[in-house]
Image (cartoon, rainbow, N blue to C red):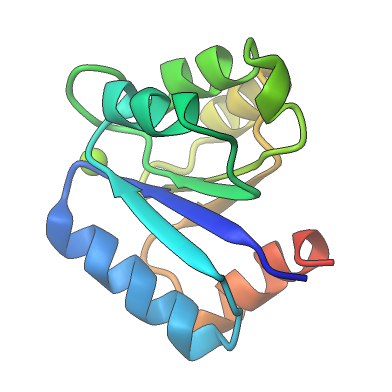
Length: 124
Ligand SMILES: [Mg+2]
């Protein structure tokens, strides 16, 4: 089934690396969009939900942890899977963001295999 992806990260370079890693992982998305922070991500989502959102934690304007809470308030995004991607990997952070509604956590640096492992359960 064709899936849509939204990559949210304040670093354009990191967004490109994520996109390239996704391609290398063999995961196939029909559409891929990018946003530079939580505010931009919510603007994109107001046009329609995506299947999977990859979300940085530390971003200006609106952080990834705040964004998760906001997305979970949107009824049309209830099926959107949110996977956090961050260099921060404290158990407290991971537990908190999962409790807020994120569906997974990938730590940087990452590999195509890690994306395959964490995202493939949501590709059906
Ligand atoms: Mg960042």
